[in-house]
Image 1 (cartoon, rainbow over the protein chains, first blue to last red):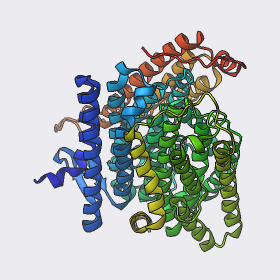
Image 2: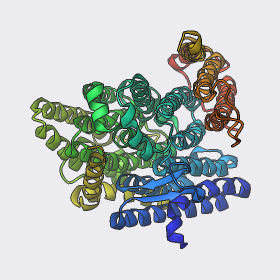
Image 3: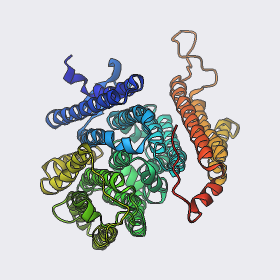
Image 4: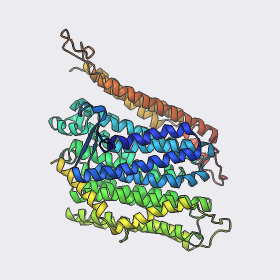
Length: 493
Length: 127
């Protein structure tokens, strides 16, 4: 068999093997080289997989040649090929950025450990996305979560330790809920293969263990994706982690959790079960709206730019879940597009804030007074991303919000359109808080504005350009998302 | 099935709820981890108990036996146990570092240290 046939396995194996390699090599520059090569190889693999799926449909890869449903299957379809491209692309941008960034934020002896943990986290996220086996999802979830806790604890502030501990507790509760859900499903269907489970579940549909499994999985995954009342771990974790880590997590970790939710809802339970037997649509709608409005309001009152944008993430996840609650092709398209667009936008914001932290010595709004004059380009980049978070035309955020509003109109829910616009106004308010600090205050005397390493500014500008590009040319994002959404819904009808 | 037949489930649910309660109600970081351990252990039981059939043997094909127990849950839980151990180890390591940085492992004390006004911007230096 040619190499191309083994791409699904290589997607996970390359970063997974590169991780111990960085640990053994120890030297900082060598470890960086390995991490860079692994993340770029992962991006190339993901793009090739995406192309293969676009031509030939779903790829099924039997690990160790044990045919599914007995063996573990890696299954790539339009949806997860798209998510793989997002995760690997962000990793490929963050690794070059991280070299100079962790120089300032992590002590030198631990640099090679940073790369080890980063690659493990990447391997875990890719594994969750690509696997077609329910228990495998849990294992990869824990690989990515455990490495995430370590990455957050690497933060310089001692509060990073507490944030990491809180995330460990919440994350483990979430993961355990997911295992309980998977266990109940296994008891009822006798299989762990997701596709097989989706077929066999028809015979036991509506029984109490299956409904309990749905409830456990929903709560567990919602903890991981920081749906509104379960988001407490997120602001501290994002605020105190090293900048490169915040950027990577904000852009990928919660998005992969959204993917898992979509996969269980539409490929395993089937939409009729999820939305007819339990009032999931209303529950998701209410939580999404609460997230959009409450978290965005909390964001306005933050005094630190990193925390401000962390709360904004909780609000934006509301949009993603709102699209899911519509249970229509256009709603799901909005969900999947926003998953990508928000990932790119938030990745860019946190990369830029990392540059700000390096040059100004912190990201509190008081400290970045006069940023617009000290670092005009960085400041402008954050404003562009802020416009994308609001949903101004010409940015990526507009595209997803447009589809969200279309989906709301399709269902004839005019009042939802008003609420979406209202939450955009809240977004405008919290972005204004940044603009006010950066442009309408005199620079502080004690902030000099150090030179920024080129690797950091290039990586961050790439994502800012992507934010604008995907607002203008939507063939890749909306095209992939619409196909993925149609395939998800078709499979369950 | 009788109540007695559901014994394993009662134990499972009790451990699950007790563990989760400890995680939520206790302020001591170590006790929280103990609760988390109990919570995770209950899931091991949830998987393994239904895999055992009364009178079932190991799944080795033989004419003498017709009832086999399911070995797959055991294998799955072996993995889950490893994950549980790793989580506990990492959690304890974090608690040790939190104690170094704050001098306390009580959640409310740590929160009050954080909330104290005029605190100099302390930074913990990782070893």
